[in-house]
Length: 622
Image: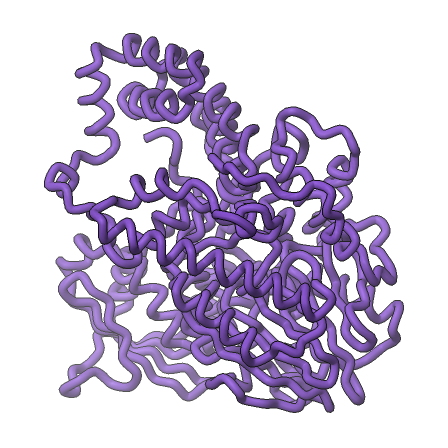
C-alpha cells in the first residue's frame, strides 16, 4: 500500500502517553469465562515489545501494535480512569458522588467484569450508577452485563445512556447483517491467524476482540441533540451528537469540571474506515470532518482528550492539533475524491491518484493508515455518491466471478499459461497483477496446485509489506485458507447460548424483522401463511404474514380481521431460547412452554422457510 511521507521516528510522545498514569496491571492479563475458556489473552502480544523487528512486519505497524499492547488501569486525571489492553476498545470509569459512570463496557461480559474488578482493587468498591454507550458498535456495549444488570437498570439503580437511534442501528448491523460481517471479520481482524511475526500483530485500532459473552441492556436515556446536558451521580456531562460519522448513531461528551473531552471513536491515533472492510454502511466523511470541527469550536478549552481506542492526549495545544489533523484527514479524503470524481475518474482510479496525504497530514503518526487506508477510504467516498456502477457499459452486466475466471483463463490459453504469466509478474514484483491472475485461475480451477502455491506466496508477500493491519490480516488469512486446501476456518460467532443475552435485549419487532431477512423468498412465494403470536409476559400480540415471498411483522391483529391459521401462546423468553438454539419449537411445544391453537403444520412450514445464515462461506475459493 503506497505512501510517500515519512513520520518522525524521533517523536516519542505516543510512547509516553500510552503508559502515562499506569496504576496497576492485570497479571497475567488472561481472562476466562465460567467454563474456563480463555476469552482474552493480552500476554500473547509480548513479542511486540522486543526491539528487533522481524522483516515480516512493517516497521510502522510494529510500532503501533506495540503501543496498543499497554494494559492495565490508568489514571487520566484524578477521578477519571481507563481500562486498556483488556479488549480492542477502552472502558472509561468516571467517579461520581456515590458511585461511578462506566463508558463503553467493552465487547464481552467477562473482560468488562475483569476491568471493573481491577478498578475496584485499586479505588475501592463503588456502585455503577450509569453506563454510557458512545455508539452502536458491539465492542462498545457488548460487555455491559459485566458491570451492571438488567435488574439494577429496571430498579432505577443504574441508567443507560446512548445516542438517539442506538437500538435501531445496533440491531441492523449486529443482527441483520451480522452473519456475513462475522465471516468477513475473520479476514479483517485475523481471527484465525496465529499470533506472531508471520501472523497477526493486531490491526492498528487494537489487537483483537474478546470472545466472551455478548449482551445488551437497552438505553433508558437517549441523547437527542448537541448541547444536551446530564448530571449522572453528580458528574456533569455536555453531549455532542455526531450521527453518520464513525457509526450511524454516535456521541461525544465533555466533562466541564475535569476539562476532559471524550471523543468516542470519531478521533483515534490511526486513520479510521469510511467503509470498514468487514462490511457496514458507508460513512459520511464530510459529516465526520464537520463534526470534528464542531468539537473544536465547542470544546476548545479541553485539556485532555480520551477516546474509545488507543491512548489519551494531554495538553490543550496537543488536543487541538490531534483534532485538527483527524478533521483534515477525513475532509481531504472526501473533498479530493469528489473533485476527481467530477473530473470523470472512477473509485479505483482516484485511489491510485491519491496515494498519500500532503504536508503535515502525511507526516503525522495519527493519520497513518493502520486501520483504515487512503485507498479503500477513497473508494468508499466514491461509492457513497456514485454506487457500485462506474458508468462504463462494459461493467453494467458483467459475469460473476467464476464466469469471468473461466473466460479469462481460456483467453490467456489455459490455467498453466495463466500461472506462467502470474509467475513472471510475481518475480518482477507486480504482486497485484499476480494476485489477480491467480485468483482467476483458482476460481476457474480451484484445485490447480501451481496456482494455489503461488497465490499463497503472493498473499504472504503482500501481507508482510502492509502498514495497514487489516490489509495484512486479509492477505495472510487468504494465504492460510488456501494452504489448508479449502478447509474452512473455525466457526466464528455461530448462534448458541452466548447470543441469548443479546436476543433478550431486542424488541419483539426487531426479532421478527431479523427473521424476515432469513426468509427464503423464492420458496416462500408458494405459500400464504398467517401466524398470531400472543406473549403472556409482555402482553404483546403480533401477526406474521408470509405472502409474495415476504415476511411482514404486524403488531396486533391482521388487517381486515383475517383469521390466523395458527395462534401461538408463549413467554417472550421462550422465543429467545428457541432463536438462540437452546431449544426448538417442537421441544417447547412438548414441554408446554409454547401452546398452539390451529394448524401446527403452518409453524413447521414457516420455520422451514427460514434459512440458517452461512457462517463459513468461501472467500478465496469459489
